[in-house]
Image (cartoon, rainbow, N blue to C red):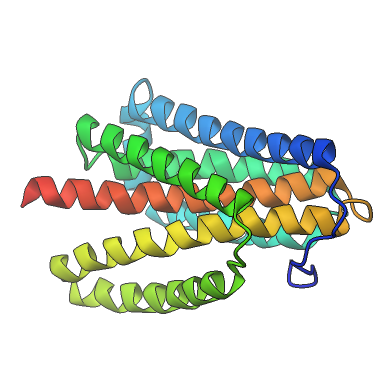
Length: 235
């Protein structure tokens, strides 16, 4: 990803660009649907067995939840060379996160989940449209947001020991702001990468790579808003 220039070409193949964006957002939507379907299966028909597995195999659950990090790195390094393998890894990530969502969602009401999903969808759609059509370079804002994300992850790990609900609540708002910016930046970045390198690399690989980045933006936005709505109800 870092090897790609973000400066678009002057000549734009509108039809090719539209096809690329349609495939990328379509695949990202499929990943979200897969996660939602797995979460539903885990929460409803297989709720008892899922809870039993999570309780009896806590170590295995942690390994499963950490696996998407390795798979995401694998996609980042191999997407343009192995689109089919990267697509499989993306679907595995979607399945694992679906399982994770089901465990997290058990702590929230249906109203919280619906409100978080609708809100994150509206924000996500708005920012992807903005990132795609704006002529303003979002790379600087994106870089700042990425640095802020790293700092937030470190601070959140520290807060795991402090167990401060107030800090968690504030961090959730910060996370929303970060992923709002990252969503617009990733949308613009993938558009520019296609314009610069679409004729030199596998379009299928770029589609998977872009779908992964936007999928991660969406689910993190959703989880942050879910935490905000849930904690607001409790207060």
